[in-house]
Image (cartoon, rainbow, N blue to C red; front, side, top):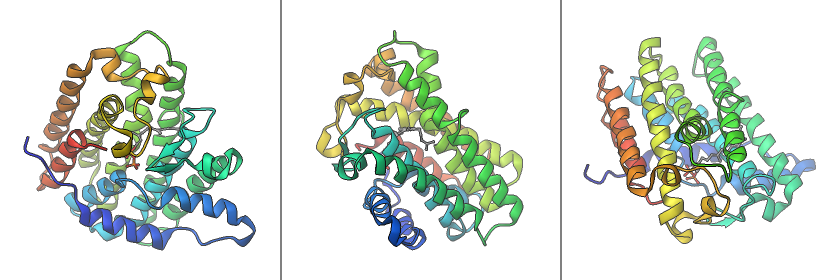
Length: 293
Ligand code: GRG
């Protein structure tokens, strides 16, 4: 596959909307607010938000209508990064090229900043004006399921409990599917729901998102092994240090590359079932395994 470019126009839309939808400061909780703001700005790739906008447009919706939900997803994602970096979890000191939230603000504030971002995300979606109530409820259901015990938190707990365990394909698939894949799939699904896509098309988008999510985390594993801290903006080699269960650890580096590409091809195949011009979603899928950070 030829190199694909990232949709910087959509990233800019997300950036502008995040500044607009970010909660207003509460003077009595200024430090908390500062820690939340510090973690969200400047951000990373805004990949999940860009995916949500793209899925909405590709399935016939207006990208603008997906912006508040796309921002909510970024708040949830940032929450997961803050908590993931805490000493009780991965104990990382660098994120997005700067000190992690707990290093900058202390563990107590970092914990609460994550909690507050998660709550603000649901506040943002529940206040949507652009979508009918039935869609709002579906979005809330999607995002809560993707991040709960059957989603991101469930994946994260297996990630932690598998540290130092014997490499096992079923376990690493479970971790990647839930820790990372569920929120990525939900981002795409939310875009399709906002566009008003019917149930069948939403499920095709979900399948695309699940394969994409797997490819995203396999690539994350590969970059942790082969990338540089300065480019990644986070500490390279931390998976090995923590004895994490990863795709290169289970299958070897070459096979991990192959499996990431296979997952992208499967994502692309799923798109073939949609009666739309799906090229923007296909390009995003290939970006996932071509990315360097
Ligand atoms: C329920 C939200 C929530 C969290 C609690 C800590 C935790 C449970 C889950 C951790 C999930 C996690 C950190 C998964 C890793 C996913 C991943 C590959 C993160 C990096 O994403 P990028 O590359 O980062 O999109 P940027 O900085 O570009 O946003």
